[in-house]
Amino acid sequence: MVTREELTGKWEQVQGQLIEKWGELSGDTLDQFRGNTEQLVGLIHEKTGAAKEEIQKYVDSTIQNIYGAYEGVSEQMEVQLDHAKELVRRKPMESLGVALGAGVVTGLLVGLILYPRR
Image 1: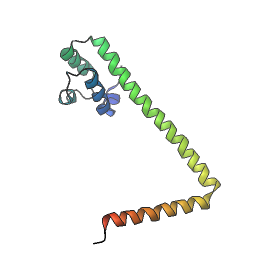
Image 2: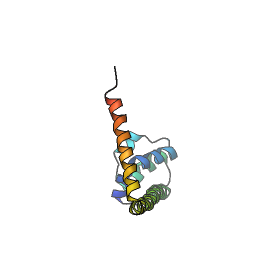
Image 3: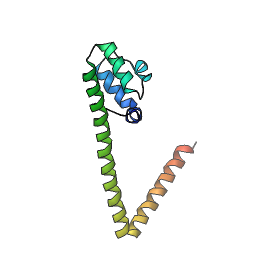
Image 4: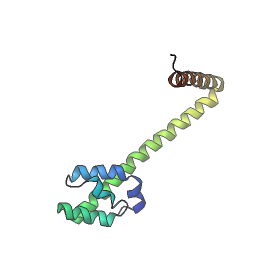
């Protein structure tokens, strides 16, 4: 069973999946059960007539799928961060030049946006 923290942490995505599966639900109705899976399952059962076991399995799998996607992205970001650190270690001067150039370009763009010529 999904924990209260897991459900609350990704509520908007879970809510969207539930409404997609059971169209009779609304965001306002679901919001009152944020984080409480037992009450949420009871509400969906009451509104749709679906079996509680089916609802519980769907909620659990939806949460696990969402967390699985986040974990995959997190792992990829760690790999890319390690790659960037290694690149900076191997080529510190080039990295510094790129960072300086990016900072100058960003500063110019922000200046043009905030203070356009009249």
